[in-house]
Structures are given as C-alpha cells and as structure tokens.
Length: 228
Image (tube, rainbow, N blue to C red):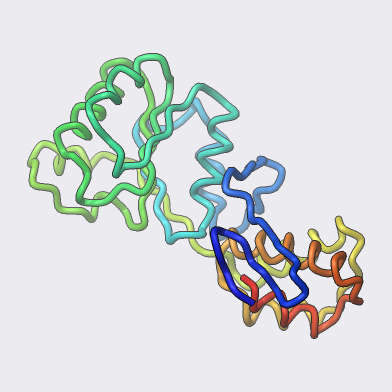
C-alpha cells in the first residue's frame, strides 16, 4: 500500500479518495460529556451570554463541525487565523458572525484587537477556535491581553472510548453491517482518537469491503486500520 495525492492505493489497485470538502451536519454531531458545553453554546445562538467566545481543543475534537453548525444558523465569515489580513474588515461588514479558526500567538494582534472592538460596537459576534484557551496566551499588545479576561472559553476533548463505540455502532447499523462487540473493542483500542479518523475509517471500511466482497471480520478491520 502507498499514498499519493490524497489517495490510498492498496495491492488490488483499489483507489480510495478521501473528500477534502466535507459536509458537517448537525444530526451527525455526537454529543457527550466531552463536548456538550460547546455544543449547547453553539446551538443557543443568538442567545450567547457574551458576543465573543473561544472554543478550544485538540485537532480532531470537532471544532470545525461546531463551526459548520453555526453556519446553518446565521451568516458566518470563517477565516483561518494564518490568513488574517486587513481585507477582513470589509468582509466582516456583511456578516453577523466572524469565526477565526486555529488562532495562535502569531496572529496579527492589532487586527485581532480591532475585530474584537468591531464585534462589540456593531453588535456582531466573534468566535475564536484554538488548540488551547486563548486567555492563556501572552500577546504583546496590552489592550488585547486585557480583553482576554472577559472572554467566554469552552473546552472540547477528543471522544471517549464510550463515544467512539457509540459512533461506530450507529454507523455500522446504518449501513446494515452486523458487528460483534469484540470487533468494536478492537477498533477502539487502535484507532486514532479523533472524529476525523473515525469517519475516515468507517467510510474506507465500507468501500473496501464492497470492493473486495470480503465478509466483515478482524482481517478486514486490520487492513483498513493500516490504510488510515
């Protein structure tokens, strides 16, 4: 097996293309103790306790999915923090919510501070996602550090074993795949603990099993786990 240009090629020449533009639906978001606070906050829009908030958590914890849910509620401008520049001010005028994704301490501080003020002055909303709470960051701009004290911060964690089990069981059931408990337990112990990898595993397993015409079992599971 080898990998090239986003494709996984296995020995029987099966090519699996993983989608780059994913559709995140609200009904596909699995709520648990690890993400309930963040989900409830997003779902409560526009009745947020504050107009500026930070949702933080490790890669794969579902932050992008939450942003997608918010996009279905109102007009949202979503920008990767590393792409932030002064053009953002004009674009923000036509939107109700600005989402700055994957923010870190390298962000242009003056632009961030100005956007913060615009959100407050114009009764707009600013949602910032990051790997750790942004009120733990140390910016050079004193006024920006001062703003951080008033922000709402909500953490999300990677899925627990129980949640991974629920996700796998439901998806297998939806695809009418009969799976034994021991197979679920085997997958849980070996799959990367992220929503993205779980989704990728389920999609790949479904396509690969159809291609090979192989019965669902441990051998097939091991082959697919190696692919992702």
